[in-house]
Length: 346
Image (cartoon, rainbow, N blue to C red; front, side, top):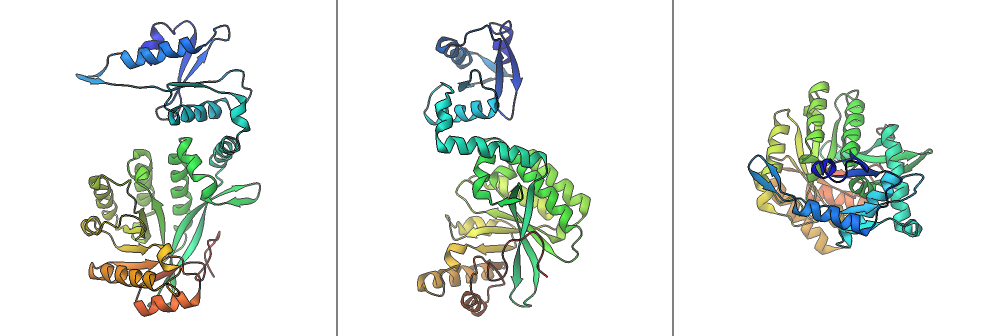
């Protein structure tokens, strides 16, 4: 991109680095941008001999063009880029008709809502209690993200995918880490867990900030990282290296939603983890579904044979809790135990 700017674009535009792998080209108002201009720019980058040291690097670009937009120009252009990628096009021109589409409108709206929340520290942690079956005490909480806007609390289904698509996911995770550690640094004897995705583990900004906070507050022994079991985790070494680093600070590790995905038992056996969280979709009907009951029973036995403790999610009634007690699950979590809320249970 820089090479192209120094040649044919130098007199007509300014090139700006936006977020991650996105760039913005601001064109002089007297220059007409048409399909031919876009085709030439795409072709130039496709055919340019980019090199890093002695390595030839192939770069492909996708363009979005926006004219005469008074507000949210970056958000609308970024969304148009994603439309072009989805349609396998090298470039696409933004049209106001896109904004009439309900899904597109919501994306723009929630991109702005998320930006405002990140700017004003309105990504807030809620806490859901985790009860120890053996002691009947609550000494652990899972931290769940919420977005606050105009005194209304929104759950992640409204904004999490937007955070990923709008390249704000890293900032979102860092704010959750910050607010969670500040809160629990003042709660002696209480452990807390935060969900981590593969995106978080490969993001140097996120992992560096996490370990800074662990060192700053010296509460690694009360911290649990919940790793979501997902088919996206293809590189065992990434997860293993992350877990090894956590263990230096006495951090505990849980595999979240176990039983919902590919349930790679070999993969689990190779990681130095402490908890298996049995997926709520299996737990929530064990009182009426014999198959679910058997699966939960077997998963619990497997975990204990591996020397791991178990946490059953989505415990929504006493009948389910009683069955889990009989199965000797170690911890229970769900609306029957406590709903997510702004403060800890009394």
